[in-house]
Length: 345
Length: 159
Image 1 (cartoon, each protein chain N blue to C red):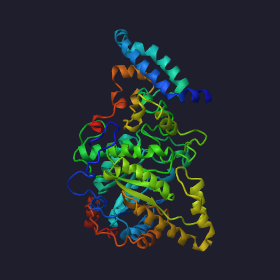
Image 2 (spheres, rainbow over the protein chains, first blue to last red):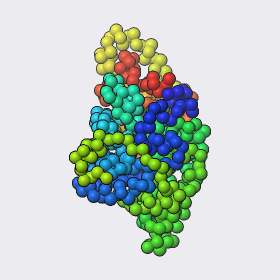
Image 3 (cartoon, helix red, strand yellow):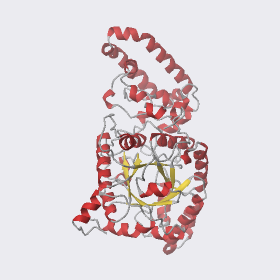
């Protein structure tokens, strides 16, 4: 990759390595169409019904669906089995992986397993610190940071080498992504940090939930100055707030989130029964605004425990129907088909 | 500690001292080589530990990149991040994990803007920690080169 001496990649770099598309999400982004990603949380417990239900709800309305990895530092079913299960429902997963719970051995082992199961999209995250989770006494690993996780995944996929430099064969196939938060200090440093992630190998980026569109516009202007929008696909993070309580909680309690007072006020003025509808309306308005920003390649809808909101939002934002899907083959899917497993769609 | 902050808020003076220390260590290198690096480390390590602990709250990772991170120790970040802040920094610039503490990276970035020698290094990718070097002297490790991978951006990222 061509980089200048600050590690920022040059704009000549193609966002994807040549060859076939790794995933449906990669194909849609590369074709220049506006992509839609959704998000599901794995269950607390071993019941798979909620995943099947949510998968069926969002399947036709999103090109890929993120699967969270012990979100909010609380134990849930692991992201790999849930992502693999989504494949059997005809939904393309984006597997999230945090640096909080794994060292570099476990990360690489899981990446190999995920790729072998047919999971093709990876989102690399630092992860919420365990102190705010449901096991605050646990050791936080942070053996490597999210940027090095990106680089390890890239070295495995593009070069077929492990972090120790030794070869691995055959190499996994992954479309590698990272997160960006334009809404947390130090604001001036954030675009450069995105540049580091791109230099390390991130091909797509999903942002923190956007409620302050003006701040996001400023961030994107700087990203364009650095030429980063030419080398990485940026999916703007959006999400509906269900109630004024949820809006207040995000505004006051969630570190790294910015919910302007106007949005909280707007929710507060709405009668309780109409608040979910108002939340969806705000979300659609934000989508319409971020779509106009040059360099935004798609959206990532985070409707936490509210999958039913996704079809509504996608339809109202005039992003339905989605382009035809290119589902990559999955050995797991084929094996299930062979034994005619009831999970097969 | 406010005295520590007052010292750390002079990043340009600190990077000048760093530059001098690097020069001096390289000048003394033949001596260390003759005495043996292991024996030299027995003298260097306590001095390095004391000095860096007082000024930077050094965690003795053994592969110092202070001058690349605004003369602010990245290992004091609760997530040990060496490439910039996580997404959890509060709007007041404080840490997600320790709300009473300023984010290490908010400080680091501000200070790097006032550094003329290594200020731009905060924009380059830093490789992960080699945990085998924990609790050893980063000065000796610099001279022997065992910390090379963690001090220099991997060639692939540079070419």
